[in-house]
Image 1 (cartoon, rainbow, N blue to C red):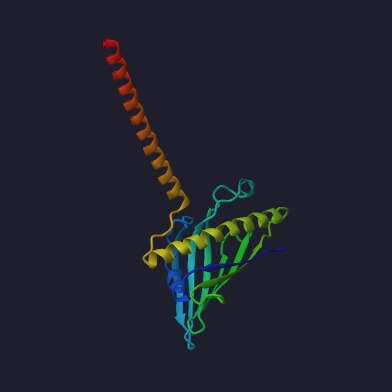
Image 2 (cartoon, rainbow, N blue to C red):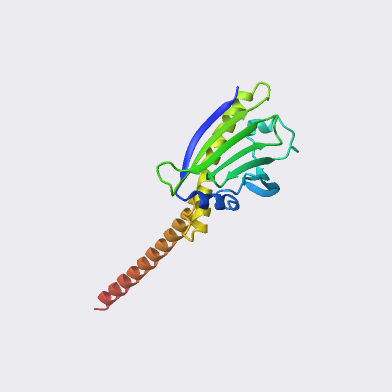
Length: 217
């Protein structure tokens, strides 16, 4: 049995901008799990399509129950192969990705098609499909459920990372990450608390002075 995912995302940038940003996605604040990326093959076909293969290394923390099934020395890094076909004439880009190692535990295969949005030619649509499978006897269903949940979470991060890089390339101020927003809020709260403390000290000092003057009278 295989778990299947079908989803669609829209990036409010043109296909040309998305195509350029695709090769510059890493690093970004939402992709800290991506460690390395290397182009291992690239060619232009006679019909002017760009074919590429990249090797990416990502961290892959297993759930605790799965860690008990594997030796401690099993690598936590996952090697991902990504094949892509870019058709500039029809403005489409299709990518296929799958993990090379840990295949006995779980295999995640993904297919994405980047094309011009049908409702707005200045936007780009991403049609995404994924298949999650496991051959681990006895717990394959649990592994697949975990893999699908993690994949959905990573899709959200991928889209946010894409938007961040697009904004950066277009000279806009990228939207702040949740961590950055929380940090700013914390610092602002400290400043407010400090100001309130200083004001309280000032009021207390004035009250003490007034009380002392009344005693003298």
